Figure (cartoon, rainbow, N blue to C red):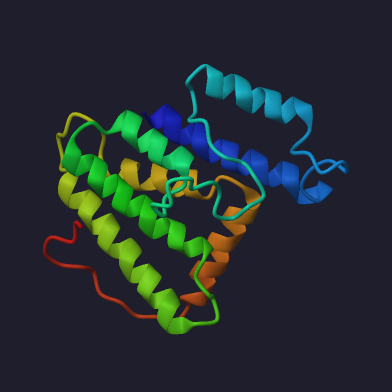
Amino acid sequence: MNRVLLVLSLTGLLTACLDGGGGGGSSDGGTDSPAPATGLAALEEAGEIPKLDRSTDLTGPDVDQDNIRDDIATYIDQHYTNEAQRNAALQAARAMQQVFTVDLDDQVAVKEVNRQIARADHCIYLVFEEGNEVKPAAQVSRELEAMATNTKARLTRYLEFNKALDGSIWTTPRGNTCE
């Protein structure tokens, strides 16, 4: 599983680097150039990395309108069969998705999204205790964050969200924060 996290991180960096100088795609409105897309597709087909939406839309597809990007929900459903762990991962994905829709000029709203992310992360740490059969809580949290910020635009928005929190103070959630 550490390998998946490493590949996700490297994929995010690769995507950011590829989008960085060329304006984000081909002149015909397509996606990344064929070579990188083929490399990513090969890793996805081999099961080395999850199949993730790489569209230019910040929020990505959410057909069932559960406020979780469909590709991330599919990944969670496939990898977390324990109901409590699945629900914790879904809570975290739902909280993270709010980063892409919140008005960054509304400090109250930004702080509320951050509060939801902190509650969801705390829930992950409660549910994915040491010695569980799946993976450590920190790894679950990092993977979900990496999946949510898998394009240059999404990562940039996440960094802008964090910048909007500069100077904010909040406390670590206590008790059971799982929804």
